[in-house]
Structure formats: C-alpha cells, structure tokens
Length: 254
Image 1 (cartoon, rainbow, N blue to C red):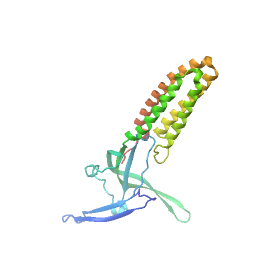
Image 2: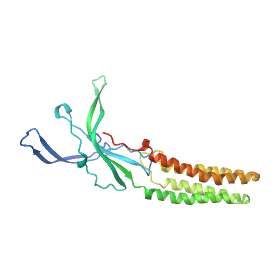
Image 3: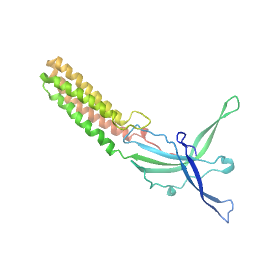
Image 4: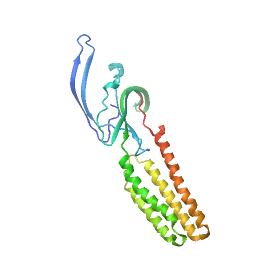
C-alpha cells in the first residue's frame, strides 16, 4: 500500500480464503481482510461545498516477479458504506503511474523509476446545509443592522458608529466560533467573512466622513445603499463560479 498513514500507523492483514483452479494450477485467488489507516490529500478551498477524494493505491513488491494487480471491476467496488456528513457521488478504479525514488550508495545518488500501481477511489461531497445555516443566519442579522445604520439621520451618526462597531466585533467572534477544515486555507467561509469585514469597514469610514462633512452625507449614504446590495450580488456570482470551477474539485484519475 502506498498511502498508509505515517501519523497513526495501523496495518493488519488476515487471509480469509484461498482458492485454486484445478484446471489452471497457476490461477490462484487470495482474499484478505485488511485493517489500516490511510492518508489522503484534501482540497478544503470550497468548504463547506467541497468535494474530497478518498483513494487507496497498492501494488506488488516486484512487478517483474509477481506481475501487476489488475484494477477492481467497477461493479465490485463498494459504494454503499456510510461516512457521516458526506455523500458518495462517484467511484473509480484503474492504474496510476507514480515516481519511485531511491537513494543509492554513499554518494547518495538518486535513482528515479516509474512504477505502476493499482488505485481505487471514491469522490465525496460534503453535506453543507447546517454548516452554512449556522453562519449565514447570524451574518444576515448583522448585515441588516449594518444596512439599517445607513438610514439613521446625520445628527445621530454616533449611534450608527456604535452599531457598526458592535456588528464588526460580533462578526469577528462569529468567525472564530466557526468550524475550520484542515489544512487551513482560504475557504468560501473565509471569503464571505472577509467581504463582510470589508463592507463594514467601508460603511464605518463613510459614516465618519458623513458626520464630519454633513453636506456630503446624503451622497455618501445613498451610494452605500446601492453599493452594499450590489456587492453581495457580485459576491454570490463569484462564489457560484468558484464552486463549479474544476480548479478546486477532486479528480478521479487512473
């Protein structure tokens, strides 16, 4: 096996059955029960709308001596097992080529060869409804307060600034209370919060200027009343395109 876990090592094998074709003595069938921990490379950029690939790759110790292990037929791949919080959307089996690097001699010269391995994989999609609701509902409330502050009269802009600072601090607390995938990267959740912080910061700056320059207050607040809805419309379009982009999708390849 080529992707056994190195952090939580576990590997147990047990021969379950052995059959031999009496008409073809060289045709033998071995069936093993394997218990092991495997490592997988995750792509968390689209969390909580991400897709992940779980795969197991294996080969014989010496292909010239023992031959190649044929890929598992698709009809034989188990796709009915349950992974909490995930849905199986595709599965695949085939041959893959990997680089086999070896260090030789005291000179530590490197030898690189191409090795064919058998691979079986499952593509999973995350059940993201609850994760998203826990974020969007509080953010929608904070955004409504943000937008409400634009309609407060210029004479009471101190109230607007107090509301906006409270909204900003509450959104920071909400961000740090959200679940974060590993490894840490710029996910969709991070983009949503970063956009919210940017808009809130702009509103605070515009509100301060409106307080200082009352003759410009009407134009500043009117522009924000249009800017905020447009910003979130463009953000929604960008996120939809990002989710559908192949750049952040796992690929099942042989």
